Image (cartoon, rainbow, N blue to C red; front, side, top):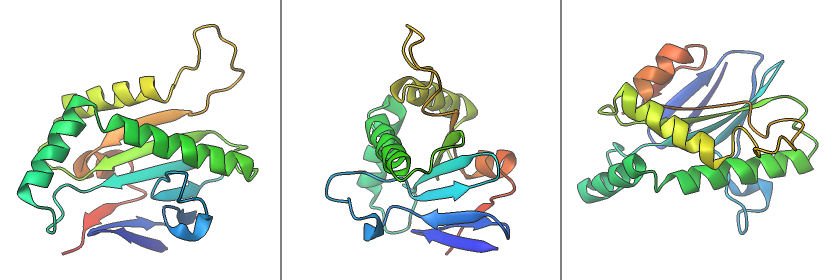
Amino acid sequence: MTVFTEGNLKITFPSGVAAKKFDHSGHGLTHCMKAVDFIVELIDRYLFIEFKDPEHPDSRKKDRKKFVEQFLSGKIDEDFKYKYRDSFLYEWASGKTGKPVYYYVLVALDTLTEAELITRTDDLKRKLPYEGPSTGAWKKRIVAGCAVFNIATWNKNLSSYPVERVR
């Protein structure tokens, strides 16, 4: 099994799953490209995973409130969009996008409702763009799936990759 931490969140991948922490300086382009936190290669797909933790103990209350406002209003979607696109472009240029790519964003905020998560997912899909151009010019999608979760919905829907808080 492989375990990664991001702040005080821990994600566990089962044995045999190739997962890497991607948002570190090791990819060499942090000066011009944003990056998702983790990239996971499965037999039939890639997972690009981004974690945000406004409830981290080191977060100040006003920073948490600002993050929640920006998240619920969709302003932070721009950051999520560029993290995905830059990571996709990096992996594409490395010859590593021969499988469908799924983008999962975990916002570790217990108060998020299912309706808010669905709204944020739908808005993020529009920004990526999930469907591609309306002309139908694209032969394949740049993202095969996209979803925004909190810890509870993550663990319910992606139980093979559990997330928990590390105190």
